[in-house]
Length: 209
Image (cartoon, rainbow, N blue to C red; front, side):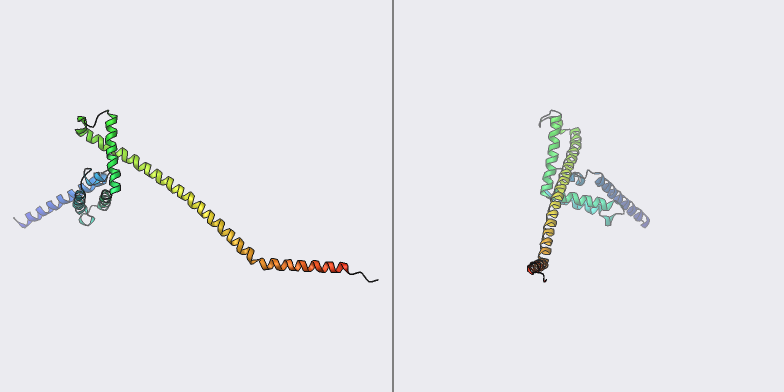
């Protein structure tokens, strides 16, 4: 094969590789980010080994150092976040519960049973994904609302604590100032008492003549 043909073939392969990278970056950025399974293109219940293997494969494909796509850093960060969430047992449990809740909600809405044949159709799978999004969004809004309420409560508690600290500081300063002026008060009282004694002595003395 001529050198020109080899160069052309290499260029085509490079172009195809970039196309795959661009497509994967676009898919990741369009995936529902509250669903880590969707970001990694995994099904619920997969073992940790699959999560690690999938992350490694995709992260190597879209790594910012290996593509010219300007969106690669954002996609890479989102991929990493999804992997971290699925490796976190508590987060993964909440996600699995949300997905299961979405399934049960659909079954109730359609008055099906867990054995209904409709659950095995592509239409149900699509509807399940959409319902999962709704449940996850609802859960996230509830979480943020609780966090906001918690922060407000912590803010009120902190304000109360600050006010108590300031009140103790004012009392402490007052006590210090009161103690510091003690000698002055005692001296003033002594001067007052001495003056009173002189006045009484002067009254007792009779005028001459």
